[in-house]
Image 1 (cartoon, one colour):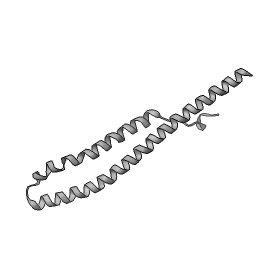
Image 2 (tube, rainbow, N blue to C red):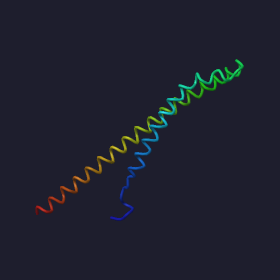
Image 3 (spheres, helix red, strand yellow):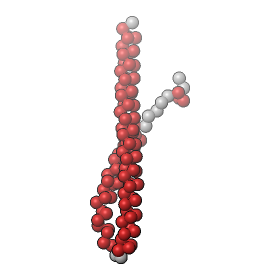
Amino acid sequence: MGEHDRLVVDYTLLESSKSNLRDIKKALKGIDKHRADIHDIWGHDSVAGKMDEFVTNWDNYRRELLENVEDLGKQVETSLKSFEKLDLDLKNANEKKREQKRGN
């Protein structure tokens, strides 16, 4: 078997991706807490109204983005667990094969 017919899984990348997605999720959820803090800085009611409209639209897009980040995080977690299980299964199969060869 050559170098090109092997699957190489970068566990460090998967773990950091999982961590980064968790941080993004936390940041997106935390933005809502600051909405009331900025309402008074707009001054004039018409400006404040337009900014509220903008923030409401942003909330809708943020919610959609948050769902996508959560889905991606679940996929990364599932991939990581699957590859870890596969690695363990392959290790166990190889050990079993070695033991069988020693027994013959």
